[in-house]
Length: 384
Ligand SMILES: NC(=O)c1ccc[n+]([C@@H]2O[C@H](COP(=O)([O-])OP(=O)(O)OC[C@H]3O[C@@H](n4cnc5c(N)ncnc54)[C@H](OP(=O)(O)O)[C@@H]3O)[C@@H](O)[C@H]2O)c1
Image (tube, rainbow, N blue to C red; front, side, top):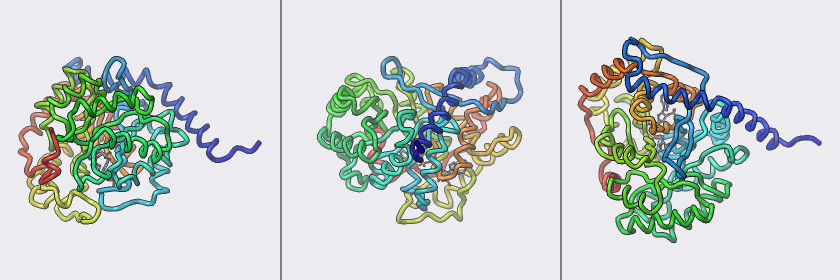
């Protein structure tokens, strides 16, 4: 009998997945090596090393709520939302289907991206290989539109989950995040609703996004939290002072979003960059304005100098630095380019020596970052 294209995709993807799975033990060893070197097991080495062709994995959460994912995930938002251009969906479907071949098994989307268009794209692309992947999505806004405000009422959470299951063409969501804490709905009710959804098999793991310490603790007491997703990058270091410590204590994974600061920490964005006012939040964010970009450029210079000596790009050094901070950190850079995806994934293969990580961090600490990360309602809704 002739095989249809879907069967062929399935077979090919299964083969690739087995290939990825076969390197899993090496992956775990590799992830440990990053940590070991960051913790000083190699103090005499002058320079870190690149060890390509391994797929590395990390674990978010612990015990029954532990979720194994690739060391870096793929942020899918920009494929339909907020990054100025919207590429041809066919190209994005092709990119999403190739991602597992590069070792990416962790995909991030949300009802709010579009709304709905992003989940639909991800669902269509990953349907043939869905069972082998980890898909994360989020609820939390009225009608899925951040501009309309927050809504995490239990009935709304359930409604979003039903919609997401349809859009994602699946019967379970691996990781369901509350996108923003809703001050009008007690966290206990939110966590209780997700707990019920987990019991019903519609959701596997619970996550929060941009929650503060108090709400993380409240949620975790009702339904253990597997991951906290918050903005964290070399220009947004605040999580080091609070929520990353809480995650470490409670054994919750930490997923930095905008890990290269919406493209800024690659050197691709400069003071002449134009943003599409209809589909890009960067045009209204202080850090993406010409004066702030120029003021913060010494950070790019430091990363470039470090990378130039070691065969790494600016984005790779920025991502490798994040990965070296804690073994439970899993950044989710977004991209619409296969070449950037490969570049970003390879950052997991760089192992810093303790000395070079210390020196690089000290140099980066000397740069005083100019410009707030959010303003207005967006700022109001974070770190609650
Ligand atoms: N929880 C939340 O509230 C929240 C908020 C924002 C984002 N997120 C999630 O986090 C993901 C990533 O965040 P983000 O897209 O805001 O920021 P990001 O990952 O820091 O940066 C993405 C931007 O960087 C560019 N880029 C990626 N890799 C590159 C490379 N190697 N060299 C040069 N440019 C590169 C991409 O353009 P190209 O397409 O041209 O590569 C894109 O414009 C999103 O997709 C979304 O899933 C969550």
